[in-house]
Length: 462
Image 1 (cartoon, rainbow, N blue to C red):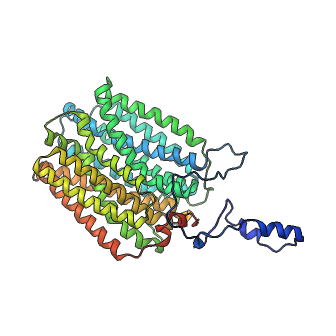
Image 2: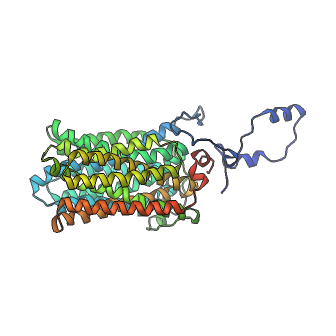
């Protein structure tokens, strides 16, 4: 893998051509500091992605770029996933009005995950050919239309339609956003890819629950507010610097294809079980978390019901921030251990009927979610070349959303046709622990990659 530095990947080669210098010129050149490749740099600790970096843009550039652009892109992930979590506290209202079963709730939830998968598989690499900005602007527009469908919904078919449109637009956007953040700032972009999803899920659920209590018409106003946020973000994306040039093959890229460079296969196979496990846990909380809280507390309070997903996702964000300077392998090990511990505590609390134990276990499991997801991303993403970024990020989200959707739908059938809510939660938790154990086995067998272990080294891989 070739290491490049600076704005122009081949600039160093052009400057290396033999030219004549005067003695004074040679002295000036030799006195200049020499930039060494990242492979020759040994860092005691991984670089802090939140540390301020020098600005690379020229004075004449008026486009949004660098770290400000990464923050805008991360906020877009937060908004997209917040809007996907926003219906969770509202399902009880919809269920009371339209009298559907828990299976319908999990199907509405699962349809979204399937639609995200379809968007990722068909449009995940499109931005590598037509540019990041066009894909993002169209995805934001389509996503806003899904919120209009939610706001005007009069039955379950409208909910299903809204979730399909929402999922397709989210899937199309996620690959482009993740790749654009890496284009703008490799270190901060890797960190933002890990922290933004949890922040979006946590904020969407709790804000929607608060809207139920304090807004006069929550099933309409929460979606209209999210549309307003998306309009502001679309304006910021329009002002963002484009990071890739147009390339042929846009139509061919729409053909569903899962391709992975040989160098990325082993680390991805190590990351897949924990990715699937943490997102399967998020799926349980997103689809049935509110029902579990109501069963354990006997309270129908909407905010209390939404706290399960908020606690899980919120502690995931905390873990991602706290562990940002640890090595990818250490983060993954911590995530697996916390996931196994947290889920075990949660399942035990559900069996004992302890709400306090349930929330404590959810907080610990959330630390596992943050560590497992961040460790997976940092183990794989730094190894990808620039032209592989959108496809790789899309593939990671494909695994994640398979874990989010499929088990949640199966859990809905288990609640109605199996042993009920509590038994379903027990079996679900046991499956998550088994997947985490499989991930631990694979991680202990694998050999750590130097590039993935140190973000400081990963910065040199361009």
